[in-house]
Length: 407
Image (cartoon, rainbow, N blue to C red):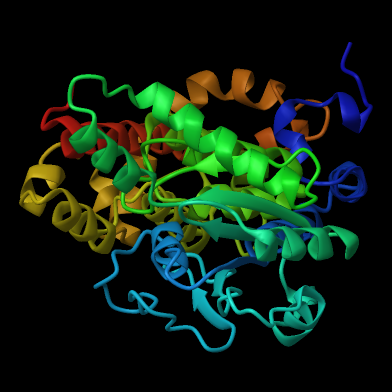
């Protein structure tokens, strides 16, 4: 027997609150599909528009601006990138909106390495309240100014994370100095222990330090930082962070896929309930605009749009055609109404065969959506199928960029 407790529904429902689920259920039970879909649209908008503001700070020359660019998937010379240099180039808080996800903003804050630095005054000057968390960057070692700032941030009730940047340069230098005894693991351990000791000496309790290179996010400990943020951010802000991150590994790609899968039932419900239009020649009705919107989002988050592919090709110094040739899904190209109708027609036969299984996963909440020509099931099936296909394309592109092969 089905359980009617919203908290016991499938994991996909944890993306919205119990109150939102109840409103949706009530509308379904009253037979008001447009109202149910409208409620879901509001929930989707809340998820999609959840703002995330990330503050990057540290001493001059520590690589703040380069890290700002890396988080946004940009190289230092790309259009709209933060200005970088060997001297301080940031005189006031400067916002850099993510090029694909405008609800995510990375802030490059002025350097903190002056003799007269006062952490409390600094936080007031940079408008402390606007940021969701702070990343404090240092090269070589952390100093008293870093610790002062961390303590003040903690006292004001916000999260901070220490990043030891330019680790690649330290390793390269060590390799030149210790040609016969070079040991990367040992050197990384020494760097970490030194950072932690400096921070403890300066009064920071249990400091967490992440070693990384902005030029090689796929190496070292960027993913550890991402995993920490994933655990500590609220649900919608975690969603914004994961979708906006550059796809640097199969693990990150899988996380993006997982969080997009949690939205599938919502998008399918909305597309079949809000301004649903019958598709000529098919026994379904849905909103092609909504389908197009979310399929485009999938492409962008996986880095399959033209701009992302061209940037990746420049970064790894291979022709963009070498990346595009491993992409098999037609959705990676321009998504048109004609293409969607063709794909819907091709998926409808299979969706009807699997509709009961798909809809039963969401009983009792979505049972009535199976009516009306299986609109929900067909749309859900299509979204799920092409999300999987695009994720496989993204894997092939990533492997081709890293290893020169799909395998």
